[in-house]
Amino acid sequence: MATLANQSAPFKRAGKLAPPVNALTQLVSLNMASPAPVGCMYRVTPIYEEIASVELPNCMYRVASVYGETSTTNIPNGVMPIDDTGNMVAELERRQQQLLERLNHLKELMDNVTAKSTSLQPIPGGAVKAATVPARAPMQVGKRTSSLVDIVVNASPDHPPWSLWPLRRLLSQHMRVLFACHTHSSVGALPANLSFLAAGPDTGPSSESRMSHDLALTLVWKQVDENCEVMVSPVLQAAIVGEVNLIRYLGRLLSPSYESGDAATATEVDYWLSLAHHGVIHGKNKEQQAVLKALNAQLGRTPYVLGSVPGLADIALWSALLQSNLASGAPNNVKKWLKTLSTNPIFALPKGCNVLSDL
Image 1 (spheres, rainbow, N blue to C red):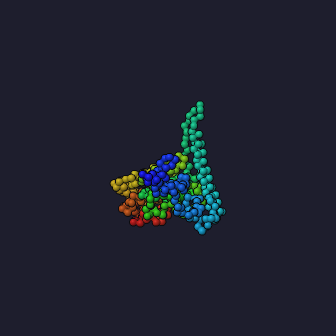
Image 2: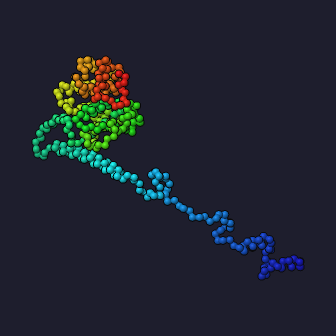
């Protein structure tokens, strides 16, 4: 007992029995002697070195210079280098002048429409009188019109309005005509015989102003049916449907007009125009053969459809036969007539068009 009392004596503290001290208690005491930093669970040795300052970009993407060999450091933001300032200013002035001329032309059209609508209004309290409409005066040779006549023709590449070429040449004899071709986005690719008529003037780029001409004919290749669509007024947006109606409209601009003669002759012209439209372009094989038979008989009496010189009837039937591919199987008189027209400069087709090569 004495030995046990002597061994427990060191564990007494202030009259109380102290817990025994072992190796684990001493290890914890040593660790607690050096407290860890506040907010840090574990003390870890750094595994990275000090990182230098990072250069942040001032733009989203870096794009190669589009100005050739010009250094990008010498180009201020938003400023494009100009090698020839004079040419650019002259081009802008030319385009501005063209826009002003077209705006003046539209203003003249609007003034004419306003004047006509005002003159037709009845006077309050006045008697209504019968109005007489004067006949359209034919355009004189060499006489300039007051404003540009702008005509846009939308036509399918499968049914080209070949009548535009002879009519343009006839109109060019007494007025300045601007003729150009364009391709609408609805047309993927033109046929081989029309590929050279995709865009631009048929005689090359013209440096003259559009408003310096009397008549502007614009042919647009577009996905439409066999009837071409003709826009003759940018104000009213009135469309004329059918190539024969286009021929009638342009025939009134000729000097003399096809309607300026006697009524019997004008009726004969309209008769053959109707045959070309209904019998050839829109007709079945039976109707087409009937028109060819009637035309063959008529050409047996006269060298051309209505006399000794070609006219609007010849233009309409010639274009209809080319569109319908009836030239190769036509009767003898019709073939002879087509060969005669092919040698006439008025009916000359653009280079590269071989629609009459099988005659």
